[in-house]
Length: 243
Image 1 (cartoon, rainbow, N blue to C red):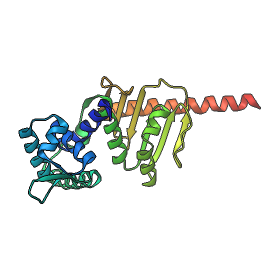
Image 2: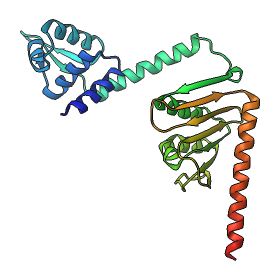
Image 3: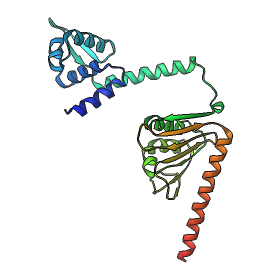
Image 4: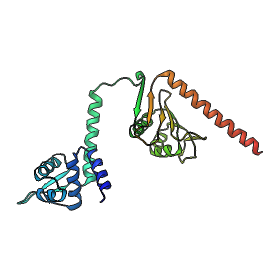
């Protein structure tokens, strides 16, 4: 396992509440089976005192089991089981927090800057999932296909999905308009109430603007409507030219 692969695994495991040392030890448990604290320290290069603390913490977090025997050994909880348990618990916590913590009314939100590719994609997905009637998305075909499962789920809920993109995409029941576009620009409108617009290049420096302001939504709606009209006129003109 290369250093880069190991670092990626550690970063991923840290998303599930492990510290860096715990993630490192968990990887070695998965790779080597049952280990004592001494064996784990020898394999990882982490001090024995820190290893014992980390192993105890992994057991508390549901990522490792303690084996019975004269010398305490630890074995990893299978990663699929551990992750499923964590996600199930987080869903329960989410339900409780949603019920107990008040939130501002979405339509009262002014203008919010969202930075970073990962956060922008999360917002895109959340807006698509929250759509109740219709959504209009103007984006590169690459980004559209990245959101394909979310868009297909919206279509399965009888949400009207209109796409403006640079190449045809395989999304059954979606209305697709093909037009040249600046690759990194995106515009999303959901239910004629919320918009997300900006730039997505895959970098942490990406920036988008999210808003529920009626005037801003109306401006973007008009822009997309005019873009669709132009696409239809150009297609009609091309068709007539071929006759």
